[in-house]
Length: 381
Image 1 (cartoon, rainbow, N blue to C red):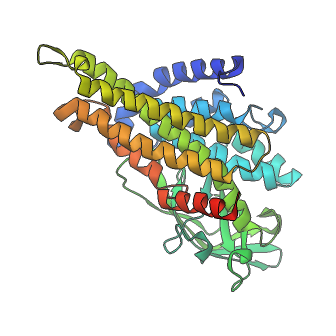
Image 2: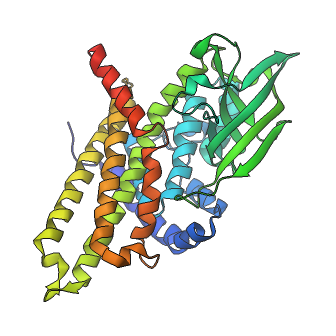
């Protein structure tokens, strides 16, 4: 068991950190404030080879492992959590199912574009009446004359504004529960594809979150991903990978918050010296560092298992659960160290406080992660 980054991992950490500090940091506060999506960020990240990191080079990706992917998401999110989730969705929720379940033609036509960053990908599972209970989705897909006709709506679609391609899920066989759900590749140019509403959010405000509707949306028959009725399995397996991305995003936010707290504690004078001399502050910093280290180890274990081809559902849930909730504690204490200054936008910890919350919600809430873990325990896994 190795506890050190190899040469490739070290290079990725260094290069992505330098990129994020140079290209994203100067614009980060602006795009959060105006709540606009910096499309050029995705183009720049694509030029860095970050949009399809675990996809083979012959299919447009970088051919790297998932530890490399986690490092990149953490370093991007350390500067801007919105950029982190843009990248995470493209890699984990769009590229992954295309690579694992796509036909050779689908990979050639679509995966190469999404992995290379020529197109942005998105993932659409959640509906107004089907969130944590994803099997309750009501969107339908009916095969008519060689075309699938999709009807319904999807909410909380990350990258929905930018996306040229959507991996979506619809019911093809009513009355059969999860086994009646299928997965589809839906280009945004498909007739009946509608971007309806952009959400006004608490955090990750530079990342667009859309409501997308299918009004008799027509796609070719060969845009079925996997086999008919396999969609729920594809969706859940894809979320196993997505949770690695969210754990890594939470790590980045937490790391940024701890660094901000350390910096501020050395500068802020009270009781005759910097507050970093106070044991109360030192204990907070020690707890932050310990939780970040533990979260990173859990996350990289899930990455390693994914790279080995091992089932990692429970481990990804553990990583996502612990990292997101540790991030909440760390950001809260970082803001506490800043005192009143942490409550104003002049200091970045205010944004970290807002950005953190979503890591406990998407790709399955903390409650859902606990269900996944508990069911694994009760099965004797």
